[in-house]
Length: 392
Image (cartoon, rainbow, N blue to C red):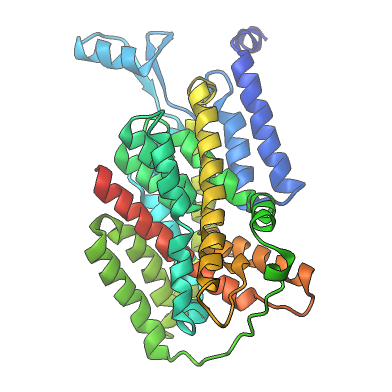
């Protein structure tokens, strides 16, 4: 009973706030079904790591007294006796899977195996919309540079990739001081894409533009083309942005498993078992960076704000680029598909299709929007590689 009493006395108001944040994430995952595979583990992990002396985290002791990591390293250098380390499971997972970028890269194999590049290959010009929708990354980089040092500004900007694994890899490689807030912002805004994008799209388009029809012309894509595509993209991306080689390579390797036709069981495993398992580990392990003392500060709020700006500018960049093209095209493009150029696959593509159907129930934009969406997946990891090339 005395141990329980002593533990309760160690609870801080900041930890209670983090419990509430964790509860909100769990609520959004279950009640609103917003990316539950990510938000539920992150929310539960947030509560777990904000319990006093949580056994899920690594703790350092001098005798019976708990001390900070900095104090532990100082005493260790002095050769002090009585030092002990209590290894926490989540910190062990973080070191094994996120600190070395292993989990995000393995997850990319599963994502690559899920993606069908057919709509993009049958209409390659859709690739330009994926590039245009990365505008938010570079806009936010400039804005974040006003408040943070270069490595942190670059890491914050990549939230605009709308790609959690890419955000983790870039933040880790650049050694950002705000990895936890960046991870949470990236995954939270991915889940909130259905809320963020529609108002921006409607603000930038007219009803007439949203009703533009784009009949889909089914074109046969040969098996050889499907096989060569991930190989060529990997080679080109590796030459243009060498730092993106692992990001693009793992994504394209997953797609090659899907398209080669001789590894169906591996493709199935990558899409389901592997992707789901890594997502569980990734989600709950991210929570190690959501400890109250690290997370509750003005910098976190600023990062969340800049992340939102990145998503808004990505969406606006894609839509406005399509509108500019329409000034020169006889066959008009529905500018809404430009918004699908962010990497939030397949949510963004589905949102654009739904908005098209809301305006005209017989206007199906799904194949075009998904084609743009998968091009955004490629563009985002290349953008991440470019950021690494510039700032490493």
